[in-house]
Image 1 (cartoon, one colour):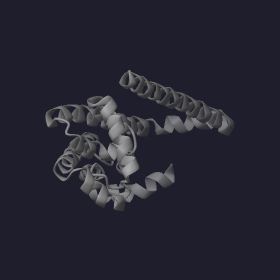
Image 2 (cartoon, one colour):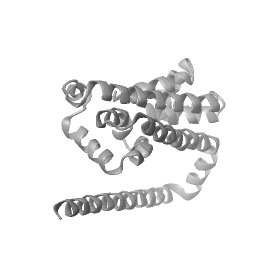
Image 3 (tube, rainbow, N blue to C red):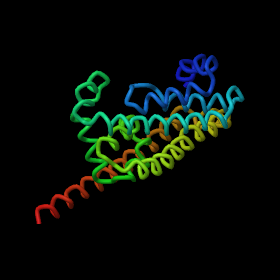
Image 4 (spheres, one colour):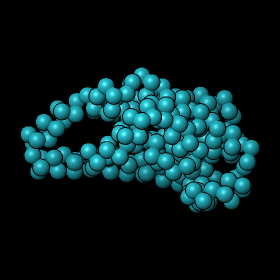
Length: 215
């Protein structure tokens, strides 16, 4: 944990909250940048009083929305073929892009709203929506809501965590290493169960769609 914050703390102290929005803007264009990690680190620093909590959340939200909409414009103007030709340089393969297109085709605007909570979808949801020709007004509405939820979840969550970090440390010290390991296993098991249910529902929906198409 200390190593994680040590890698971002000098950068955030030097440049302040605007840099969080700037990094999230460029990450939303598909660039492999640590936007989410920077937001979490910024939240913890803001909880200590080193950064402004309000401006951190505002810059993160604005940077995310502007980046996604810039990505939408690029996808709309450039198209799939050109994106795949040059996107390979930043890890945008045809297989990865096709997978994201399937998610958007199946869930539409809902995929836009929750895209920021899923890696890869977070970086490319605007680009894919633009390529798919989703109406901009619809994209903007769900993107604004989704970015707000994501910033509150990660940035706000980090703020709360940072304010109660001493309590978390005390609890971990009280339950000891075995208790902490057991707690981690429970959390991992719950997360794995949720992911399994989501995957099962997604596969079931795809199979049902195929059966309907065949009939």
